[in-house]
Image (cartoon, rainbow, N blue to C red; front, side, top):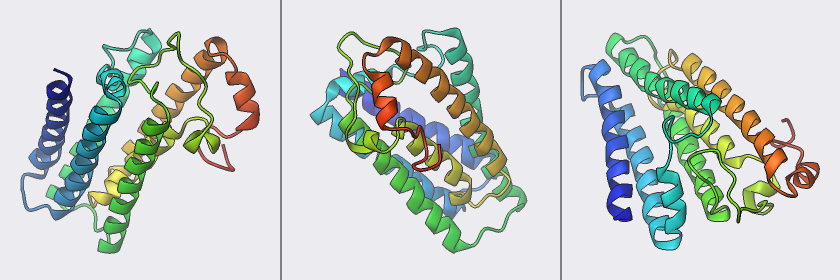
Length: 223
């Protein structure tokens, strides 16, 4: 059943994050990680349950994700690198806690958790606006250009939310050392975005016209 697969996927993701953070930290006395994981897992569960009720086909599309699910070799490589870098952010943050490399002020940690929550809310709005938001890059026969909601501001709001989430995750976990990994991962996401846009321009009707109306890809007023 879809609901079992979706909830099992959430559980597996959270379990992987816990192992990737707490094993390198070698302690459960890591309040920054508990707060971050509460925000992360709570939002993932909320989004999953909401769309299981309102748009189960979206959840079905999102379950097809990762390097194996991608249809094109270039995207398989990008997704493989992105997956490794995502786990590496957690591992480095855990090591940072174990070795006491960083001292991040509490106010910045709390602020970063608020940004992570906000990033998930943006992703939620994207899913609510665009039922075609798949876990892989593909164009379906019934797909159309979405121009409302977050898509009226930037062309790839899903990636905007993902970059916010990833860039502020190290700070939420109290780690300066993991920020370079997040920056590299953001670069990989941009490469994925640019490749996806080529496909959209080539295969999705009226997408070129949409680009003329919404000039910014990722950051309003900048790019």
